[in-house]
Length: 381
Ligand code: LLP
Image 1: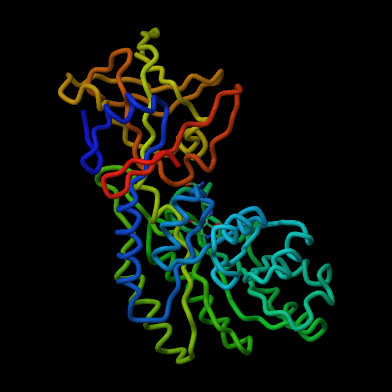
Image 2: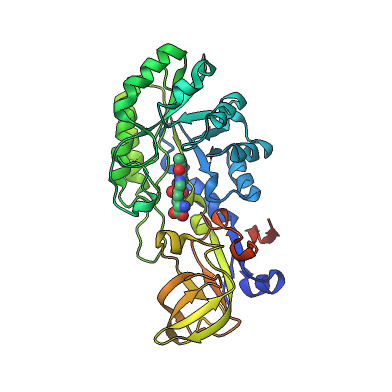
């Protein structure tokens, strides 16, 4: 059976049962370091998108590394503050939220990003002398999964560029300062040139507002979900940002909000085989999990590699891997796996981001346990 960081998966499952999520702390640190190294030539700050995985143990790792937080709800803000992040460490970019939540963010003192001009009259005088950020919609159609593209002209996210004049009028009326400009192009963006196009839009807008201190480029950093997949070309991305900063020639900090880049491939979902059953044509492997634990395959048609860690030498056979929910609950179709038997443990990879954080208790099934492997220790988190 396979090992993760020198610890046998068999022993882990024996002790903790299944299904369970397992995260590798060292992987997160390596990814963080990779990003800071690539961005080392300009002033930058990493704000981990905690929606990807909000487990406190993961947030502590980010905090120890010196990172900040990208929050999207008051609950995320509160968790970050309770764990010791400072207000200035947190950017708050909610989407279509209530005015009350924006007021909360402003009053608590985090960096609030406003994504619609329609909020300004509703916030009114509460904006007086406040510093805020603007989330813009650059109207860019990207290559990749449409369900996670957020910067195209029909997306609900961000302020259309044509509304920047209105922002200025509201600025005069209510007396706030625009301190930051933000975009988030989408998740797992295939082509770094699409990210570059979005970033270029932000740089074009900077001169329209006096006193911009940071540009928040969101995320979209592509990760490998399957063998042969490309990853974000960080070198090209950093070079583009650097050249833009050079032309701008202002003291601007770059903020970046990676979620899946830091934790996606740090996590695994282990699930045990309940049954192997033959249908008319297919052979189904029924496991003790489902989209209640990892919704990505069903919701985004996302591909997650799966290994039968109990029988690595077994003959290759073709299966549909299905969950135990009362739904057409499917992790993988026509997937080649080493021969699967009842009781075998399957490892579903790349499950560290938007796995547990999107889990639910549908059919009243419990969420899995989460474990962290760090420096040879294994901890229930
Ligand atoms: N910043 C903002 C404003 C975001 O909305 C997101 C993700 C991120 C940063 C982090 O993006 P990442 O580095 O993880 O790509 N549940 C989907 C992804 C939805 C992402 C939502 N926003 C998935 O499982 O692929």
